[in-house]
Length: 220
Image (cartoon, rainbow, N blue to C red; front, side):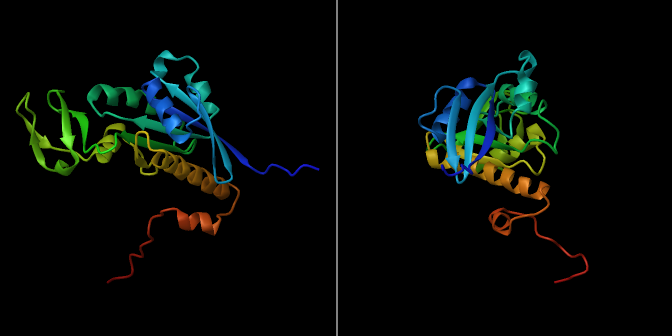
């Protein structure tokens, strides 16, 4: 008698403003992926990935595709105003906050130390160095000064991400970083399933990062 296959199945939808960005992420996770589809095993979970890209307002089957997903990953690259507006359109069409788990992944090239945004005054596309985050800068086009943002913080603010949505950075072409982002999402889904079943596995809980509890009656 054949042994029972106890591997769990998880359908993860990769959301992107461009089809190629989603496909590249899947290929980074699984080198044998074909087009916008890929399969990989993370621990005891078999993950199936599909890409859903473009403008949800122009895709009649967008919402139906979302309903089939167990978890979601939104891919980000540049944070100029046009890219942000397209990502906003995607994020606003997602299920409610108590529904499908989601992670946001920011893709960087190997060795890249800056990122693209738009000037908040005139819209000029600008490169911001990581080391200049939180410093005052001046747009070369409109000459107006503003505080240069941290990339992750800027993305969180622009999309109005909830605290429960993590933003992770991965390196393009690096399998380890891409799989790490996917594994973090799989762990979250597994922990959520345990909570819904009425219990929390202590080993899973210890691997997660949770908020410290503060007793207002205690003083230092």
